[in-house]
Length: 341
Image (cartoon, rainbow, N blue to C red; front, side, top):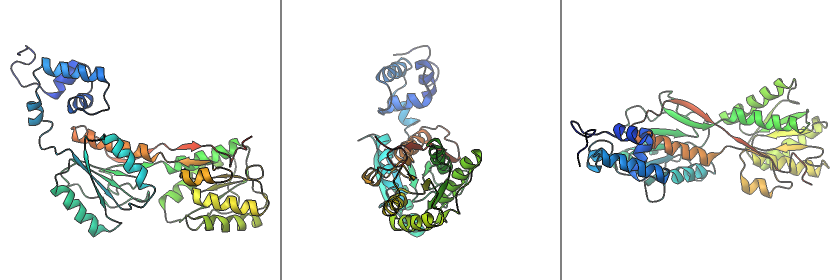
């Protein structure tokens, strides 16, 4: 089948995309049989490829040269509840049966991580997603790696790498804006380990929202650990020193659960006397709290899907950019800030 368009030179993926009226990335996905392409679009791309005599062999020579259909996921904390949704999101994007995933847990050990990295590269993975256990910057794997690397949750400390992380500053702002919308003006803050970037970013966002409303936090922000016992202890101190507070923004759902427990013991009704908002939307905790917990959700599954998508794009030869990208978070309203009738 020879066509005038296909004559004279070998057709490229770009030619196919142009003829089908789609992007190069979409053409590539359609030809690779990836699931995230509309059936009508896939047909149009396949017809364009046939008309241009763009064969799988041509693809193998170009786009798919050396592909193994495997991706490495290098994590530092397999137990973490931040890891699991990110990994689930990445697996969703990879598509069942389309891509094999090698999962390696470095347990926060740099030597173990290097060992896993060598093992992944020796298996000739097509790309790597590095998932951190907290949002603090982590050392880059370096620029010499022969396959695309995307950092998820914990950003790389090298601005030449692409990192995707939740927007904790926006989350802090969102939490305070919700409390203000509920009519609260005397707001305190209890959070976890102050050495965590997440703790500082959430506080900075909270302060910005209060300043915009001409307010400030009641008392100094209280930091210790990400736990229910700390939430209970902090609430006891807080309600003794500042009995007139009408809301508490907590740096995690665990802390918020502790705050609610102590408020109840001290005869404060949540949310009527005291509104409480958490962070993480750890559903097991948030929905079993009494009342159920209003909280900020970091959209971690979406983060995992985006990380996988960026790896695919890079494999397909698309420039995925660099630097740290902060992905949107969302407010989940339950009964701890707005009374449920």
